[in-house]
Figure 1: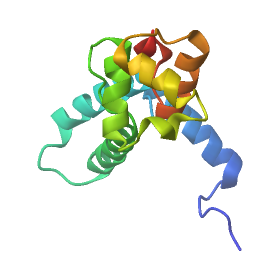
Figure 2: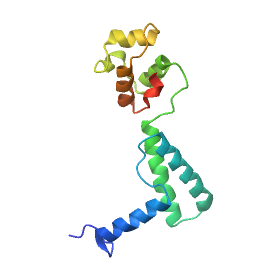
Figure 3: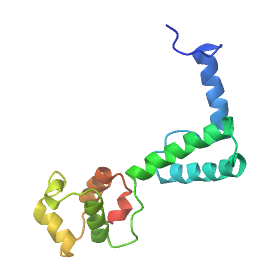
Figure 4: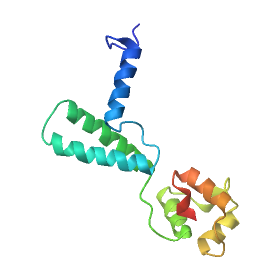
Length: 139
């Protein structure tokens, strides 16, 4: 069974992939900086593929799919107080305070949402990991 049908095999394919990545940013989106670079690439491609089919249109499709996956898991957060960001994320993910019991007690979460308590660094880090956001959203 052939793993790849590329004439040169995996080493040649890896070399070609490396050359391509040297020319454009094409890889999984792992953070906001990657996201911004991918959106910029999509915008550049959109200028050249309007109404056309072929390689660039296919590349535009792949880039658009990567962006869509990122956006579905990383909604735009409101520019707001950390407690309001937390409230927004709870609503967006259809979660209750008790669903964050692995991060902090429901009492602590309640106090944060009511504005009676600030979010500690450790809780902010855990929330950022849970929701796939930057820790600064909670600080």
